[in-house]
Amino acid sequence: MSINTSVFDKAFDALPAVIRGARPVCAMILGSGWSHALASFTPLARCGYAEIPGLGATKVAGHSGELLLFEHNGKTFLAFAGRRHFYEGLGWEPVLLPLELARRLGIPNLLITNAAGGVNTAFRPGDLMIVTDHIKFSGLNPLIGPLVEGWGTRFPDLSEVYARGLRGQLRAAAQAAGVRAHEGVYVFTTGPTYETPAEIRAYTRLGADAVGMSTVPEAIVAHASGMRVAALSCITNMAAGILDQPLSHDEVLQETTRAQPRMSALVTEFLARF
Image (tube, rainbow, N blue to C red; front, side, top):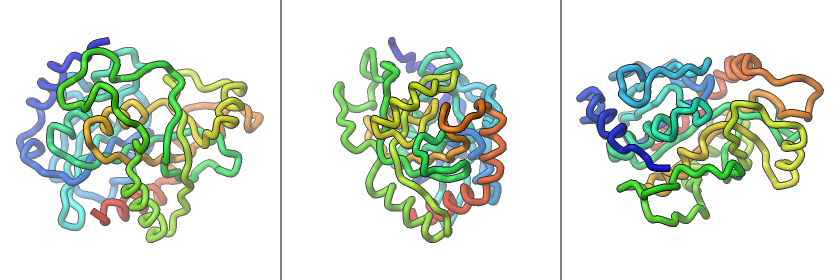
């Protein structure tokens, strides 16, 4: 599976000059419902995904679909409000384009957020979780194929995908914001189906705490490229079989709306520590 890097070239060239000329200290890829976490910030510049070739408007509810440049505590940040998913069937380019644009802009840090199902029965909907590690069973890997220039070595080490320093920064931010944040292992599945109860039982035995359909592909490539990566989940529902009820995306959106004050407080404190 070969990555078409010309897609990245066209997308980078289409960025507004104010964004190409900025030097943000951190980029963010915001998952379902997480765009609300930036509601208190006034953008210095914004660009709709439909204006970025190769990215295009997201079609998943809860993803606003725009690129934002903003300032906080004298530092500049870049936020991709919404993401594309592999299950949309358009290949890896739309999924990886945000982190590749961040890499080309020389941004050293990346925060990836998501909405996830709770596998750990100690978790409750609305809880936040700092990702410490991940499990990937899909067999898919965005680094399969010819090695893309700038994406590190042929065989990247994944001993510490989620940077210890950034995890500590998230812990300190949670404490300062008065927000309870668990730490745990995230399982990546491709979706778009939710997992079966049998799969969730298997993930539990393997040490998983949350499950979702994003984050890991972006984290792998960003880490291999030399960026420092952190990831944060909002537990929006308990995974299949834990509670006797069906799963739905509406539940995901409702829970992220309820959790928005905690999500916003934690992200604001995290950014203030750069």
